[in-house]
Image 1 (cartoon, each protein chain N blue to C red):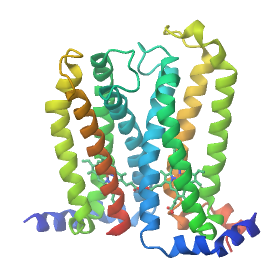
Image 2: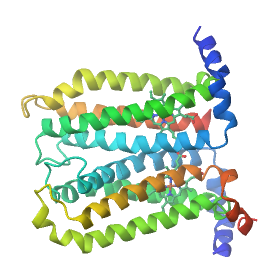
Image 3: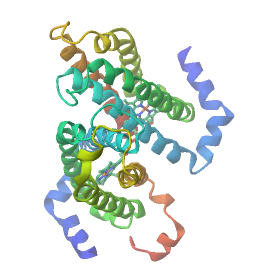
Image 4: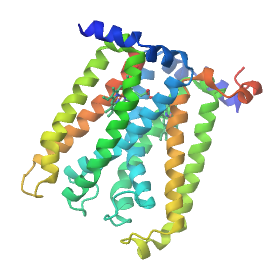
Length: 174
Length: 157
Ligand code: HEM
Ligand code: HEM
């Protein structure tokens, strides 16, 4: 892994992005705005599953009508995130919050797929009702917590001085 | 006058505490972003509907009424987590053009919401021609502008 990061770090295109004055602010700003589109819509989907809001909207309406937009936001978010990483791989390699964010995103993804291919199959039975199955509510809560944690770890990446002591002891960035 | 007000904010014991306490600023910044996500979703669900996208099977005024509370409370959360940052970095904000642009659009956005946007969203659907689209477009534009300028305060000031 480390050699992969070091290899990218030395690529001319990575160096060019890193040395560009405008690239970082532009990418980070687009990263935040696309996050709003993605996470904003997903949050209300999750809260619908939990039963906190939009209770009169049939559950299955949201994936068909809102997910294309949320996924567009996610696509832009991934691209800008990847570019940010590509431009300074060695800055993030030793960063606890970066790895935490990646792991959290992975778990959030697993939760999403699990929900979609298991729990959601029975949606016809609870589409209109207020009685949402426990599994679906649980998936909603887990998703809310995980995406909020992704946002938090995303912002914390800037605080390389505030990583846990046990992580610093591993000396990964050195 | 405004400058001395910002100097006064910067000099408050609370501002000193924010800067001294290692975790205070990062926690507040993270909370500001989580509130931003809640705010963005509440605004988008209605604005997309105004544009004729999104949850078109649900009556617009029903969606708008439901999202109204979420929009207001998440804005309150943005204010509560934004104000301490203004206090602790008052002079930086004062000298940042992006801060002033952000605040101007925030005020315009709020006025726009409570005067025009809400009225259009609560109105009888189909009675206003293309106006809902214009309103949805402007609303998305304003809040995106607020976010862009906000992020640029930290990056370019
Ligand atoms: C492959 C996916 C992603 C990668 C590689 C990635 C990478 C990055 C990088 C490198 C930064 C810059 C950190 C810094 O220099 O301070 C960042 C910031 C951030 N990311 Fe991501 N990211 C990804 C997906 C996401 C997702 C899905 C979310 C939220 C749902 C998210 C939320 C954030 C936030 C909130 C910030 C801080 C923005 C700010 O400082 O205003 N990221 N990300
Ligand atoms: C009156 C309410 C608000 C106040 C007082 C406020 C204040 C602040 C301050 C002082 C910062 C830190 C800027 C810096 O020095 O880096 C900030 C960041 C930010 N604000 Fe606000 N804000 C408010 C509302 C909003 C709204 C309505 C939005 C979006 C629709 C927003 C989006 C952002 C974003 C995206 C950031 C950058 C986040 C980061 O990465 O740290 N804020 N805000």
